[in-house]
Image: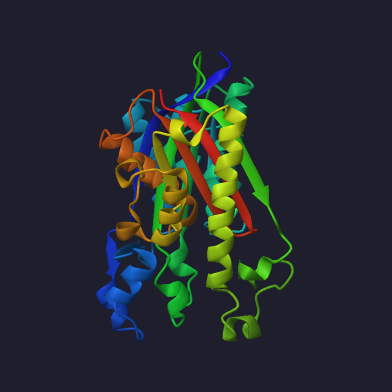
Length: 326
């Protein structure tokens, strides 16, 4: 078998909900202002004791239950995240261990909000090449721990959550095409400046809040719209398909206006685009797998549907995958 298909989906979000009304008590803003500019109503945030692996573990267990598989049935575990439990070891190692999957391959991927798109391409390639029969890919983030809660521009955007998919070898290939890209010439547009080897964390960095997410919102917005459309076009061309062949669009949930622009270009009506940004906000690498899990479990995505996953993120990075649901 040289093909791949998704046989399991799962997601999880923390219990704590931070709605727009709560944010109104933090700084000068309003529910109307946040909703009109982002489409967000709520976001889920972890408690002090919850880490990225905790969310990933819950999503993984849900995906295993969906697929009726045991942790030992999975040959490799991949976690896409920008905020792992530790600099090392990899969060994927911790998740696999807590599941009881002994001696299995496990590693992390860090490409910000593009993590699921990149991860889906890598995981699919491992299965299609015959390296592994089954791979679990998890997008998991706890970005509430990284936002500057004094910065309205970022504090309103980000939420925590995890989504997981299980990929399995198949005679019928669901992976139709992928388009990935990056431009690292302007990392300052979207980054956490301190905490890496370029600027190790120290008291000055903490005082400057350089250990928190910083984003040039307008520049990133323009970049996102342009690259999401270009990536989708390129991936569809590789698959030999047209815009009219797309049955479902599942985009990264960063901003409702960005999603609307992508829908307009692809001529996708709202009922064929999965949008849950109002509930979760921007969960980075977790946003697409959470949206996919909800759509599959609700029966919206059906066998035979052509699905486009598309996203962008820090790097700056972007990507799209065309998938035939089986």
